[in-house]
Length: 247
Length: 245
Image 1: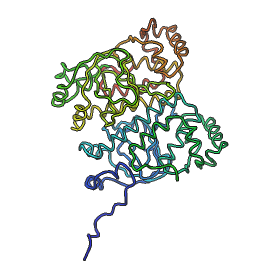
Image 2: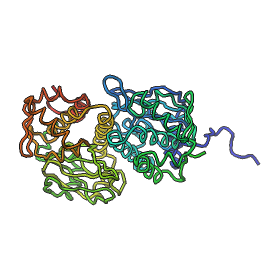
Image 3: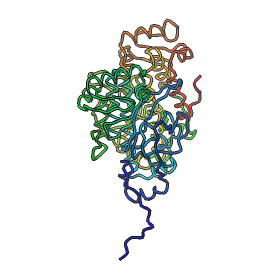
Image 4: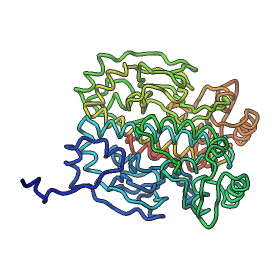
């Protein structure tokens, strides 16, 4: 007996959490508009006061959302990996960007026109629930960053973001230039270099030529400020089964 | 804050969201709206609380603060009559992560979370107004993350005073230095010195917990750009009548 016709488009298994939790019917209605794209490190997907035409659902890699001042100095406010979606304001029908979006770790994503996302969101259903949960995570992280940048020192903040990046990428190995690290923390390169050197000296990470590996995760967690734990609890309550930074 | 409202809704409460809701949705919500006093220090919620109501302020200033385990706190958002208090409940999150407190006394309307969530599920005018509010909150918080990292106490103090007075629609604010230092996440003594400098330069007048903005333009030059960035986005979004000078 012949099986199903072969002409049916085959969709590779979706790794993105928001998309993968959608019912098949809703995913099918989006399939035509979801375009796979490569995320190359350093690509800027949006700038403040620009209009976002697309939202991005990472399958792998990581997109950083940053607040930028008029001199062009930026401070990271949250990181999006395969658990989320970049471009939340466009999804919420507020297409004018307030923040900058930049690819911080190479990977792949599904790109969806913002207008399609908005149309789908007018249906009360799983997509709306998933987005709301993710939006809550973004808000918690952003709020925590506002506090963290005021009260925690550079070593704590560096540890916080290295752990977070490793969670989002599900790998203890991170490729990050000192420039990227400085941009994450909103601190001088020289300050970040010193802090990274200290974490390395104490055996928590190894770092050379832009390749950073978390060696002793538990001690890094103990060095990080509480912001890591607070955001992480929210993260794990939304992502089931848990994604892990450990290899 | 001054905002534009449809002329036919002139009799609605002075809250941007309530004033701009479509008639059908306003009719649904107004049944469960209750007018309440919001005195200074009123706690809408503390961390780990469950909020039974959302609030639509018509006057006063609401402060949302993040707290550390060591008891430090810092303000992450200011809400006035342009917004709604309790957005995380509307996103389906029952547990509050922050401390939400009335910083400058005012009044408002409250509605049960359940009624507001129902309205949210209609994906109509209310939902869009909430989306807009959330986006503005994210802008405000993100800017604070940058501001708290890069800008000094004096510029942050000026930013805060301008923002609070704009939300409160008044050049006068009643608040203690204790409040100010908590909001800015800086020592009280530092805040006192900076407030003293602003006063000496004739930008504000400060006595017995009352702050009067005397020279708004000069205060704007003392504030970091975060004030302009956030304020102009609010004005564009709310179609406010006057733009930032």
